[in-house]
Image 1 (cartoon, rainbow, N blue to C red):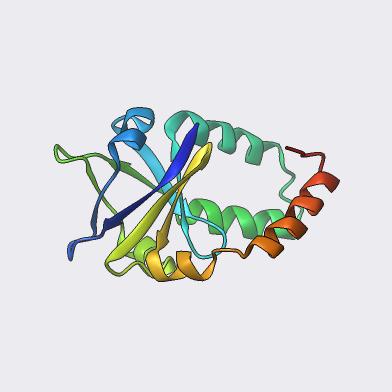
Image 2 (image 1 turned 90 degrees about the horizontal axis):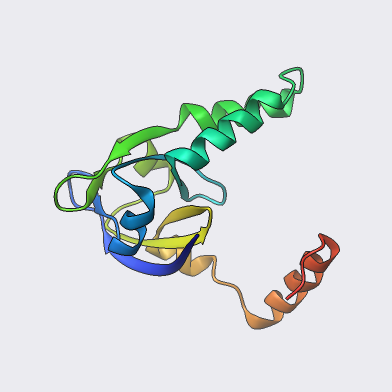
Length: 144
């Protein structure tokens, strides 16, 4: 399980240091793809295979399923850690997530999200808003 928030930078060549806590769980090779809300999603190879299997079960007669699978899989890239614990983010993914220099890596259960720092700060929620969201989560069967 991934959790925590880490601030890092993307260098001019598009390389990003992956926090050591995340590297331990990710292994040497993993998948980065376009995420929702304007960030990137990072998955272990094992989790990516589970996602692939779920997509194989979805009927491609659904227009939304076809659109989402194109979005999700066409933007995906297998990446490897170098000896310094960095990955090279493909330009198309950096552009999609508007990654310039300062980024935030966030652990979210089975994935890591990579955010442009300013975009991450814009997506931070107020306490009152969290109360309302928590009520909606209860409707989905989740309570804490």
